[in-house]
Amino acid sequence: MTAKQYDPQNVFAKILRGELPAHKIYEDSETFAFMDIMPRGPGHCLVIPKRPARNMLDIEPESLVAVTRTVQKVAKAAVKAFEADGLTIQQFNESAGGQIVFHLHVHIIPRFDGVALNPPGGPMEDQSVLAANAEKIRKALEG
Image (cartoon, rainbow, N blue to C red):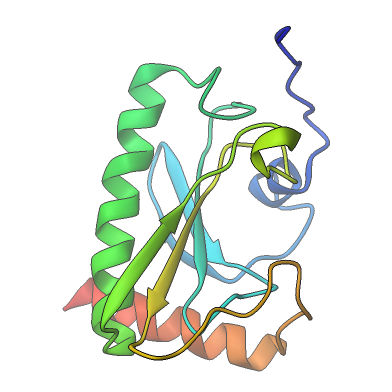
């Protein structure tokens, strides 16, 4: 496989630049966490690096460490906020690996016993639901 180039016009790069809206959960100097607009379940959110990285194959190690720290922090808060029974963490690389947006991102999906995930690429969630879910996770991060 030949190295693929990072596209600075991808949707997550546009979110980082403030060109597209997002329901922010958490932000620090290296990472940004926000709600997935087509959630596979309640509380489904994403963590991305602020530095350009197409995926796991080209991210700088220091940036990956920062992403991993934020994933753990947000995951704990999401489980607490939604009183989840478990958690699914997903990360895809290149088209063959299931990646659709070519800016590294990690999915955090609270899980509940006996409840299946919604199909990927499902309908967009109502903005008021996303805002309320983001607020739940932010509150869990505070306490």
